[in-house]
Image (cartoon, rainbow, N blue to C red; front, side, top):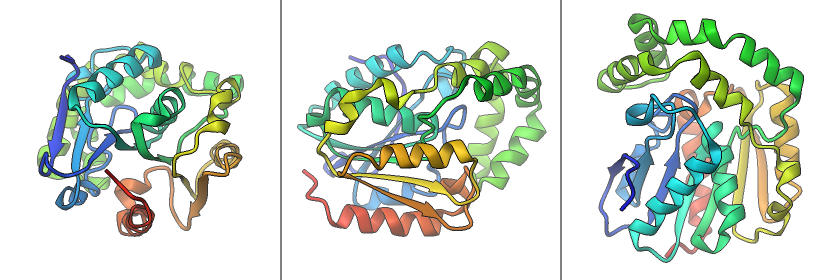
Length: 249
């Protein structure tokens, strides 16, 4: 039995979607939990968030824990949707065991790391970690992201455990798609999205993901990196349309 903690929404009788949140933001998909009317949503607490907030992000260990969790569900296939760091993990999962998945949706998955950018983000890590320890600031961030009061309060509680080292690990372990040749042969339905207001590296990443002919790509107009929270009406319509065309077991 997996030790990885997770939240779940919706009936266990429904098809399963694994929701992999962004770095440090457990309730990234707060405005997609409404899909629990048709699906059983499972939200693992990834390293650096929630009940795993004190863990340094290690993609290989995290991936294995996720496969252990998937094994425990006793389903032939599930769907996976990931945002940012969670999007990278979703790509890793479908590349390693594509037969376990009905579909994959990758939102703002940065898969084109360059050393200068990684170094820049790491240089901000000390300051960023300090800010994550200020409860009012984290609550304000949660409110901006349309979190409920309960979700924002919880983020303020666990964010105090995020150290400089943990924050740096989100960036130093960025997936490089060029090192994953198996991606091009994945044949499940896939969708990759980024916001029109995102950085150039994210748009290059989207182009790289689009090199697999089974992966449809799109840019969400007027959206930034946090579009699952801030542009949910637009995004949910796209996801609904995508899912309506897939036979989900």
